Amino acid sequence: MFDGCDPDPPVLVSVDVEDYFVSPETIPFTDWERYPDRISVGMDFLLSCSKPTGFLFVFFLGWIAERHPGLVKQVAAAGHEVACHGSITGPAGGNRRASFLPC
Image (tube, rainbow, N blue to C red):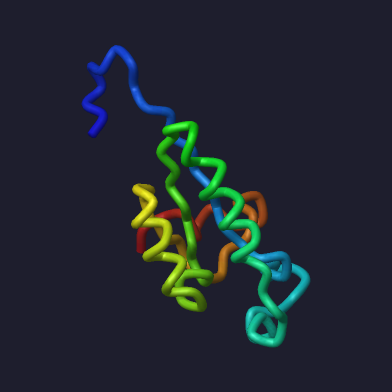
């Protein structure tokens, strides 16, 4: 665990994992199930590339975690962090200020 005093802190990489069709602005959420996914190809590549670097990745899986629970286990087994945001997200610029404020 990085405590802020380590002279050689780990490199942390944050990755928001989405499949090619996950775009609420162009494809409605209700249609996502109809598309064949290709997420395993990209994730296999990322996980294999991360091994020799020693970098710690934080993978935000969102909706992908629901559709691929085995991928969650694979990421954790590789020593990376699994994180989640809402399943239906959009660009921050398109959201109103009120959506960022607590109720």
